Length: 140
View 1 (cartoon, rainbow, N blue to C red):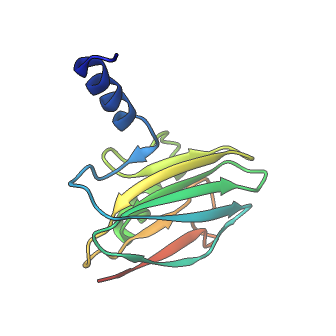
View 2: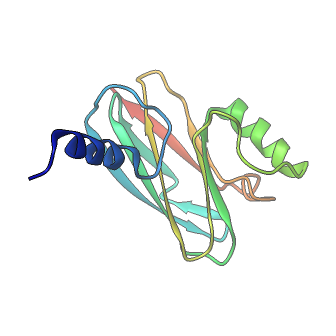
């Protein structure tokens, strides 16, 4: 028979596993969106997500190039793009972002609020300038 401590420890370990979870707030309803990454485009290019819902994006890199997915507003997207052009590695501190190698899949989770005006952008050299972004519409 399992002890209460062992069951509690197992539950804590399971809760801590998984992809990148940008907002660790109270429990929220969940939704999942599959996103294809191609050589210089996301598919779809626009999404409507429900407010106050834990949204998990599953990014499938179906192209031959490395891609990233960075969630932020337009100013944050421009700043991150400038950093990437300057050769900075990594992602903005505190922002939701993943890098996805060709043929691989990555997850990114975010809880959107009704007033969010966010985008998902790829900032590998030239990708954002070529239009590799997803407009996020948040419905209340």
